Length: 270
Image (cartoon, rainbow, N blue to C red; front, side, top):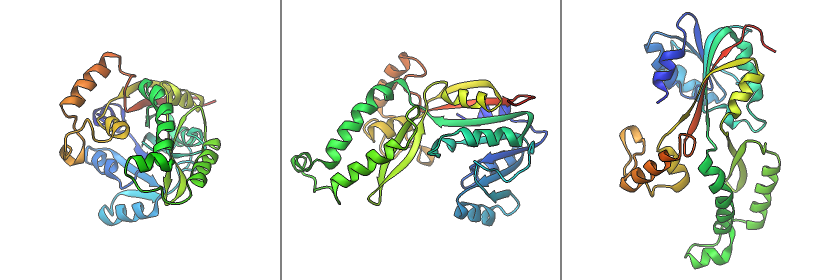
């Protein structure tokens, strides 16, 4: 899905940085395809694992909002599923991409999609989740035990966190260890394009991408084959394939999983 796009657009006449490289899978894969790779990752444990397994790889600790490299260091950059996890929004991370790319350098970014289906369904789901998660009468009728902890405090914590997130991006929130937690933003069509253009990029390609993860995230396992597919990737069952065909009929932005943007740094940034 993403692999052929990377191989098509990334230049080989300079170093490619993965901003937010995790355990380094993409760095290793692209290095084996002949690219000169580097990576930066915020989580120290991931960096240690990378260095232990791939000691020759140029992977270092760092924050995508303040990349530890001089201006114009890279010919290309990838950041896949990273900038949506910054509660303040993606702008600073994208500006750092522009700063550390040379003029004409290529950036490839992916973010989760807040597609047309989600826009209609998520506000309803938020209400339903709050009811089924916290209401003691509903839980009792469903044969579930009372919610752990103080339901009122948990609901208030979620409301407080929601007030501190960016409403123009759809904030996905949850509870971790009894505390409200920001998970990620989901982006509407064209939102990440605008962020990149404001940072001095020219958008070359902007594509909606599909994946069975969309069904898992929204519906759980109802429309997935039991046991998943190769390497744990979920596969749609018969009902899922029928539903997917219906969704496809509404257009590529109706039920896509993410947006992928390929952008070129302009010769002169704003």
